[in-house]
Length: 362
Image (tube, rainbow, N blue to C red; front, side, top):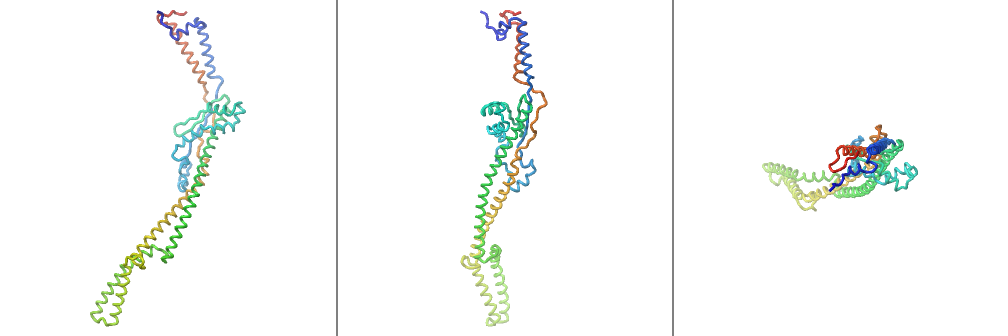
């Protein structure tokens, strides 16, 4: 039984390729034709590269940090991924088509132009967070315009996104500033009302002074008692001076008892001091918190103005659109030429060393 022929054997035994002269002429002609198509017509490679920027690269990190604007508008998302998504969006392609009037220039419908741009323009992310646009066209000027328009469209769209985010952030901050301002006014009014009620211009200092009166009065009473003991060595209790000292001691002890009272209604007592100090601390904490919130929200609101100024600088152009000086090769014709050359070598080897059972072809 005759074994089936191989693929090369089938090609060799084809009618036109059976004769060596015709076979070699056809293969050489095809190889030369596709090799010529690999270099002609010549295509020009246009490219441009850009990278997302941050405040540190602009030298504004200190200013933006002080104003609360040092955070990326894209949150925790990678800026390169966002830029790639925007660059590959249909909206950016429509901007490029409108700017270059591709519908009239190419004679295609909007959908066909969109597909043509998606096919002809290569967008890739390089190491280091660099985004590169690349196009190969027979018209060098058109290729450069196409890449430049794409870079401008991406920068414009990212600027719009940044401004929209800043506008939304400003709207929220305006509301927060208004609410914190109302809260600050209420806290200030409550604290001032407490000061008027207690007649303390500085509540904390007055309360601490009231608390210091007890040890001071105890010290005075002890000194008066020592003085009374000395006077009793030379006079009786009927003595006018002795009676005066006794009256002073009694008055001081009465004041000390009232000061040591834990009743909150007793003026200048321990209970009143504790109640007033607790209330003063509470009102002061609320006032400090309201003031801190108002100052922070106001600072962040000021930072949105700086973000507006830097929104157009969120993308830095590393390489403007340029034409690559290297000669470009059309890969598809070159690949076909290489395949044909390999087939030609395989045929010649097959003829020189045919498999057993197959007839040699001259």
